[in-house]
Structure formats: structure tokens, C-alpha cells
Image (cartoon, rainbow, N blue to C red):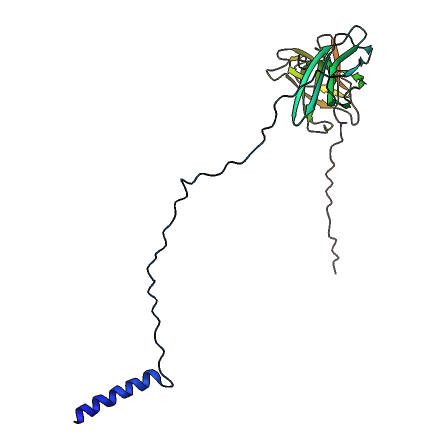
Length: 271
């Protein structure tokens, strides 16, 4: 009987502890629930096409009712036998044509469409227009556009010296790059290095040439000398290539820097 009462009392005590004030909280269950979601494979789903617009690669120059014409001139007047390129430009594409100038330098491109145009002229191997001339041509307009070319061909010599500026009394190295500029068949100016060409250095009395003179250009078209500046200021230099003499541009000779040392003597007095 006493055992039965004890068991009943323990049960009542346990129930009171689990539900009454001050009872310990129930520990939650963190066990993840089973997953029922299935991952879908999109690799075989076809995508809807997007309508695009391919950029045109060519456009028409004509036939039309417009005309572009003009005269090509250089330093000595109208240029005969020059090439004139005329481009019509629209939507990132272009149509091109070329014509030759007559004996009086005139040219004409008839029966073309209206629109945005550009033009340039050149004559192989010595004359070129290095920038385009832009214009707008109306549908039935007769546009007059004069083009200007300049002489860009022939011998060209570029010089550099080290140290720069050269210093009086100190050796300096002079390099001259010898090229020949020519206008090619497409109107592009190209500089071709001249190799194994004899170059004579001409120097004023303010210079003393220390290396072999004349010398010849290497495979890069460069000729080199060692020289020394005798006098500060502007001292002229030039080179002769074949029968042409070309002046060189270098900075003035500079005086050497003066290093001034100041010594301080302490004078003591004897007592």
C-alpha cells in the first residue's frame, strides 16, 4: 500500500514539474524534415529567338541626281593626274569611288545619291591630303568641293642627341634617322628607312666630331656620331645624303654645372 502511494506521489510531482510555474522548457527537435522538392533541369528548354538587325556592309553610291566636283590644288597650283576618292557614308557602311583629275586639276563624280560624303586627294609618290573633307550633298545638288594637297614625299632626317641638351666639354652621341617618305597607291604616307646609305655630318666651329665621318646607315636607317660641344649656345648641325643637305634640330649646348663647395673654418681664441 505504501509502495503504491509512493508511485502515485512521484507521478503527481512529475506532472506538476512539467506543467506548473517554473517548469523546464521542452527542448525543440532540430531534425530536418525530409525534402520533397525536385530540382528541374532547364538545359533542354528551348529559348525564344530575339529579332535582330544586321549592320549593312555595303550601300549604294548611285544612280542618283546629285553631283560632286571640284579642283585639286597644291603649292604650285592645280594638280593633274591626282587621285580623288569620294565615299558615301550611311548606317555605319560606305560606298566608294575614285577618279583622276584632268590637266587643269578638275574632277567630277556625277549621278550619285544624296547623303553624307567625304573626299580626299593624293598623287603618288609625293602629294597627299592627310585629312578628309566632309560634306553633305542634297538629293539633286551639284556640290563643288576643292581639295588641297601638300608635298610629303622625299628625303627626311630626324635627329636626337644624348645628353640632351649637350654639355660643353663633354662627349655627346648624335643619331640621325634617314627615311624617304612616299605616298602609296592608296594615298597613305609611308616612311621607309634608308639602309647602307653614306651620310656626311656637317658641324659648325662650335662642335668637334670625335668619330668617323662620313658614316653609313645601319639596317634601321640610323647613322651615329660621337662629338663634343665647344661653346655654349646655338651650334648648327646638318647632314648631307647624296646631293641633299638637311639641317638637324638639336637643343643649345649648355654650360656644365658648377659644383660649389663651401668650407667653414672654426676660429678658436686662446685664453
